[in-house]
Image 1 (cartoon, rainbow, N blue to C red):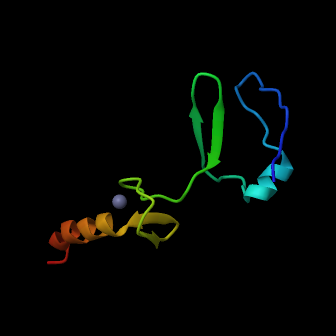
Image 2 (tube, rainbow, N blue to C red):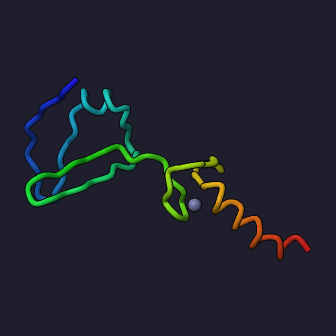
Length: 85
Ligand SMILES: [Zn+2]
């Protein structure tokens, strides 16, 4: 499915993503979008969950409302072992 909209950018640099596109991509207020630009285009993608420490998108564990990769979780566990004594 392809959506095409023409939108005016406002004085603050904002654009509105149409409701049909937001619904199609399951985008909700507060979601993070990844914006890439080159010489003549802007690409906006729904950001994939990533590790809060190293930004990898692989091997993630959900901790509360955050994502942490197993590697960073392991390092945290090792570093925090000094507090368990
Ligand atoms: Zn990580």
